[in-house]
Image (cartoon, rainbow, N blue to C red):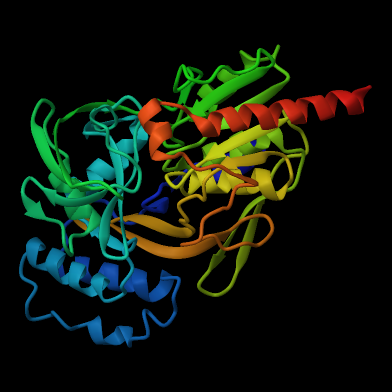
Length: 408
């Protein structure tokens, strides 16, 4: 198991992408802007998951801008134009500042308002607000559409550009025009702050639901912190007197694959966790060790903001019949990006694989359907009544009782 974890420890999974960091070049040696462009062209030519490159002849881009690229900025524009032809929002170029910000998230802190964003069907959406951040406290929700950032339309905007506009120095403000289903558009003025990426909490999200004494509650808000699996195991060990667990993954946008693997391994006694398939059809399968921390019953809460690493963990637990999933259909992010550090400190995220659940299900753009579907109504939200958590408690008590009957 230790070697397995080491092998996959650099994989990052988020609602925006599933990433593996590859250090392609030392940023201090001399290079030309044309060489930078060439480097990205070759990455796509050899690694991009779709061998047709969106049904185009990739050679046409090889020397297209030879006479135009004079500066780094020229190369950046040329690369962005080239990658845009793939029509893949997850394959993208990152300038040095953007690349530094992306990789810094692994260290556990960010500066901004604390929301995960993505583009779906041309719309800039909030995938999920991070717990206890300015974005969440302001009332932003999963599936909110961002129409404007500081008065500027987001039509046609990329995730990178949107993130760059939303981020900023601590103490400054950003204004978002939000469109929410069945509501009038609303303006949110939110003060930026340093965002500490807290992963695990055992505090109930509401006082409207009282869990049974035999039930332990663990909220996993993100897989991105390198300490998430350690925090999770600590919380689990604090519930040794409980007879079952509710694991809340609602609005969890993803994080490190190693965390998803380790946490899955705590509950699975062998079995497939996830598989990846590359451009050549090569399939690599990741399996759990034949030992686990507990056999106690588990209910997992998911919703439309549960993405990528959350879906890998949920899919592994569902397909292995180790847990019952309660809530709403998950986000549906099943593509793997490789993050390549390029010349000059910039980077490129290239889609290189898709992933499958243990049963071989491709969940991209489909998501995972819970075993028990429970949707929160507008009235539930207004009354701060967590109907999904209440149902999870009821389902878990049934599982606990069935296990106790078997033991008798």
